[in-house]
Amino acid sequence: MADSNDVMPHYRAGIELFNNCEFFEAHDVWEELWSEYRGPSRTFYQGLIQVAVALHHFCNGNVRGAKKLYSSSRAYLDPYRPMHLGCDLEHLFLEMEECFGEMLAQEEGAAPVEINPELIPEIHLDEEALTKAIAEHSSEVVE
Image (tube, rainbow, N blue to C red):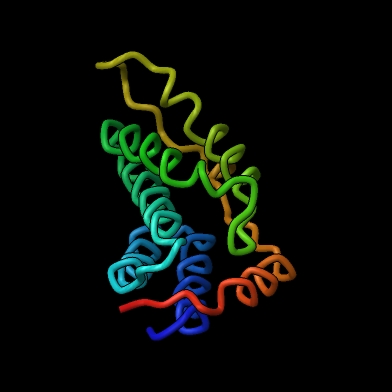
């Protein structure tokens, strides 16, 4: 990966996997991107990785892991709001709040809350905003 144009196939592939509820696979793709990337979007990618892993944990009943990664993912992504690289973070945050809300509200030791498939978030990509971001950040490099 030499520049931001080389990053986009991994970014898009991760989004497609994420939106198909293949959270661990999305994590793998984004982690490969993140491990080589050294530009200003590095913590953005880290936040997406953690959203994917939080959902992976939630789907597998690991409430403790899901709660931890939910919180850290939001902390990583918050500085990039409302939109970054075409990713509508406001919409993602709203969907995450709906999806994780009941689980986050439950007391420690309570019966596990199962994820509601109807509330699983998706990443909404604004192609126009992504094209503009790529043009603005075409000098981003990775090592």
